[in-house]
Length: 134
Image 1: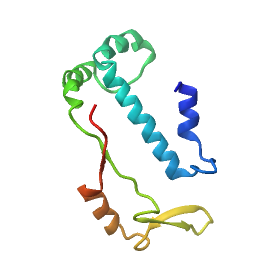
Image 2: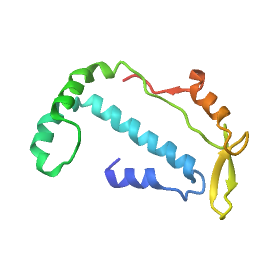
Image 3: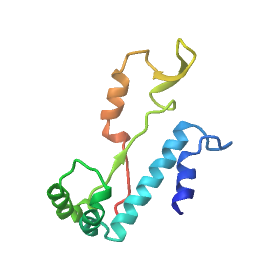
Image 4: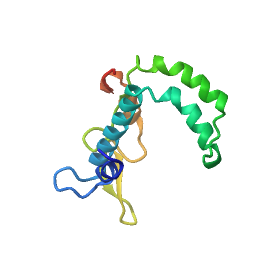
């Protein structure tokens, strides 16, 4: 998938079958996972410091080169870890609502400003969906 197609895929909201913000978020996660996998597979990280040094006049970051180099030395170990995720949706702890000024909003199912169920949901390790190891 090229970049233009990936952007269309990730940003689309108006599909008749997979439209809406929750499905758009799921598509964005698929793109991020695919990029992560590609970076690991092509061994890109060790090549990034020379690339950053070459492009340094056109980049702005608050991460020092020394910190980047430290990260890169740890990167080979990162492929041993899984990235886990969960989504807060109207299928679990949220419900659709309308604000006082008519905007679409998501509210906790157990009541406005009651975040207890959401906190418990986030902290439940059994609900996490791990990515596959490379």
